[in-house]
Amino acid sequence: MEPTVKRITLKRFRSIPFEQIDFDNPTIFVGRNGSGKSNLVSVFTFLAEAMAAPLQAVFDKAGGISSVRNRSSGKSYPPNLGLRIEFGRLNGKAIRAHYAFEIRALPNHGFEVLHEQCRVGSEFWFDRNRSKFASNVSGLKPLLDPASLALPLVGGEEKFSPVLRTLGTMRVYSIEPGKLRDMQEPDSGTSLKRDGSNVTSVLQEIQRHSEDDFHRIWETLESIVPNTKRVQVKKHGNRLSLVFTQQWGEKKRLLFEGFNMSDGTLRAIGLLAAVFQRPAPTLLAVEEPEATIHPGALESVLELLRHASRHMQVVITTHSPDLLDAKWIADRHLRIVEWSEGATRVSPVSEATRKALQGHLMGAGDLLRSNALEPAPVPLFDDQLKLKQTDLFEPLG
Image (cartoon, rainbow, N blue to C red):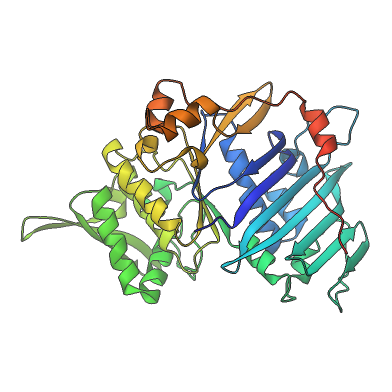
């Protein structure tokens, strides 16, 4: 599927002073530990939470605006936090659209929204400049608070609801096996939590929605964890746990509860629940899916995520050459993440790397093993110039 998100422009977001990142589907961010991969994909969590909760609560959850805003800015230009996201698809249809905002930090952990803008197609738009709001959609007169975004207020209007819904259903996952071992409190099961701590409820919801999808989970799980034929949810009073069936031969079968299973098995079922959850996310970002997974099973894990990219956008972070061994991975899927001079840098691959991949001289995994998976050169002009020249907004009306 063509990417929902085509490009993101970030200004002073976490460890990123400035980046303009183009996306494919799937997109794989490759970088060492500490390079800023988690900071990069956290933008999707930030956007999703900002669509559903007050902006103050979103910043507080992240440790305050000072933890979200990059503070390496020089004195010659304002250290405002800004973001622009450009869409290629909305509601499953190809459409040109964008959403952008800029936020200024104030003393005592305060902040204000300076500018906010949304355009859908060539027809509908709104532009908010501090307390002034303008739109070509009649009847929109939101009561604006300086510390609140306008899109969550006007997203009920059908012209802008696809943007609100797309941003609000982006999901980032870093599955924690320990959370899957524990008995879990039941919930609606309509959205898997970031760490997988409600996987039992999500599996129940998948089964209610589609027995076929539930059986696909079993089949895929066995390809990752041999002899594991199925997973089911067991009730313990008002709590839920996982039960796995391992079988070999015709009649040799054992049942294991989640607390007896390996980290790799539990992480695998968490990833499966993330992919098959209903409703499906518009964008699914998975951090280091190779963690605790046997190298021999990584092909199945990556194929699972490739399958998911057929009906949602998929973003992956990794530092594993084994994960990158898949022959279908092309230069267009890869972005190199580096930590340089106190900042996170994101680049497409170099021309030499591109030629090696396109000519099938080496695969991405082999290039990473030999330290030859190289980023494209950094442009000659510096970040301060880019920050001044690249505007998040555009003329409307």
